[in-house]
Length: 115
Image (cartoon, rainbow, N blue to C red; front, side, top):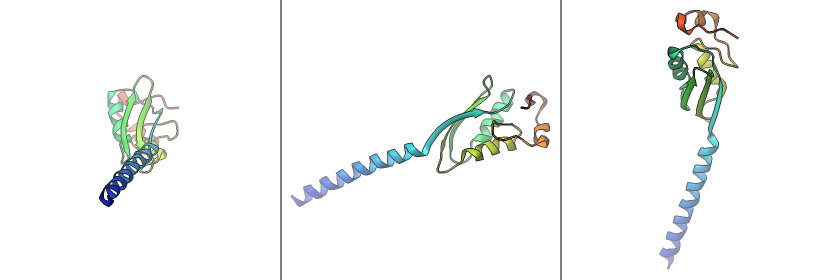
């Protein structure tokens, strides 16, 4: 009888722990989108690669809308860090502007009208 109670309590505790960990993971996972300026397929690759820092699960930039959609873990990375990393490779975002020297080094097809 004691074995059945112990087993039942163990199963019950495991079940609660699983539900709690799933809830925590969902709270840490965030999705957002923001504007990133660019012009072509090379820009898309550069922007998405710059956005994929530790804690970013996925990044997809749309050339037509110039919007970057990202899924990230908010406990591992700050949104401002993602903006800054994209600006470091020459692309302005709606919150960070790339340095002029970095922007000027972009290939001609990647030069966009700066805001």
